[in-house]
Length: 225
Image (tube, rainbow, N blue to C red):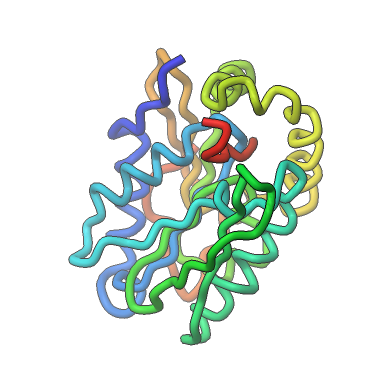
């Protein structure tokens, strides 16, 4: 199955929300979070946002797929991105994340995150409750359950299939506990063969942020692609 296309219906609301932040300080150091279930198209959308970024400095892109410490690592990755990246970055301190080596099943190298450029974090778990106040634009991307499952399984060459049920259980627990959709400022729905849809959100902005723009599970380790 082909990869989802982050067409203008998905991309435009996100870029509009970024532009609404203005320039210094929010726009130049904006933190964008993109969350949603596995196979919804988060990675494709994040790539499109980076390519079309409206500011003078391209954002740093961090994928939670690179951080999950294994198939049961959703909560650990949420904790790491919050405590090691979002919190220290908001405080103006050094921020970094550690890559998980899916081939060896062990921790790998650390990657620093610049504090003076925009940041995009994409992946299941990005919109945890604690992350809301540490971000500027929060995107929830959903898609038809059957289509996204097949898309996710096809993408990982069948490796994900053996772990799907466990991942879904962890994902549903996260979704019930953190209610990520509630914190979104942009909600999108993408279904192949239909135009992507958007609807206004009731997400709670921080730092005086507007909910500008329109709106509407699982890792893909490099070793499994």
